[in-house]
Length: 337
Image 1 (spheres, rainbow, N blue to C red):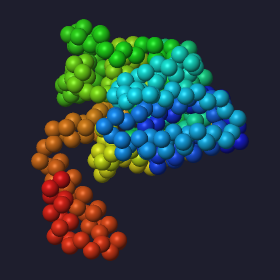
Image 2 (cartoon, rainbow, N blue to C red; image 1 turned 90 degrees about the vertical axis):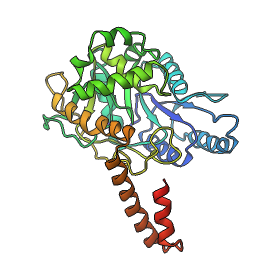
Image 3 (cartoon, rainbow, N blue to C red; image 1 turned 135 degrees about the vertical axis):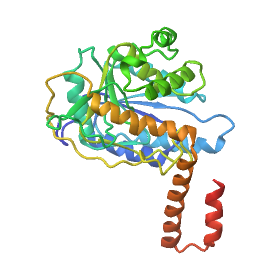
Image 4 (cartoon, one colour; image 1 turned 90 degrees about the horizontal axis):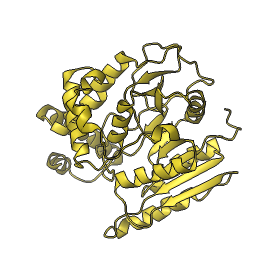
């Protein structure tokens, strides 16, 4: 797919109340010129009137479609939880189209991301062993570097794609979790006992309704089906959504924030064997989910490292901007966080 060609695969854009990042994602979509665009939008709670203008600004941005494109809209009329809005939105999407590329309003794709997804959606359209395609690579090179992508048991969602035939297996209620847990199947999927313990706790909390999220249920659904996710050899999407106004990722100094992207060469070089890259999955579990586990437990070494990093960044900004706030006050503010 060249920059002059219209993208045949439908694109989904999930938006809420971030007009600045929505603008960046929409510009990337505009460059790809999809023939079909599906927009899913939430509304803020009634007691958050200050967020309504931001939501309206985001909606206005995505209305500026200036290329030949069929646009479908699913705009909430009242506030919905993060989980309910995304799940209901994707249910609507896959009642409308057979396959789609999915972006949230803070995940900016590299231009080649669209062609990468389109080629793989076509190649694996009928292969039940694959349920998702991600644009995320967390700086983990595949073991077979000569190919454009590898396969993983983990699914990531900061720019991804899937099919109706895969989404039909999504179960927000995780009905099979008690049986899955009792049988000890996590031990067959995950690389070590620490990973099993963390995922067992996380999935149980999700099953019990203690997490307002939709993505752990999707990961679980792919595991129930014994399916894989395709992972690019380079990172194709950067997440700009880390910060104080984020729903989940509020640490702007998180190493996963604003990862650099690289283009991927098209057409893709396809691996001859479809099996999970266990080596990459082991690193991912340690580097990505192990990091989340550390943040959740907040051990003292992590808190100290985070405060030192934040202090260093703020002092540099303080000096560069010629701020008048006394340095002692700046440090006192950091320690209170």
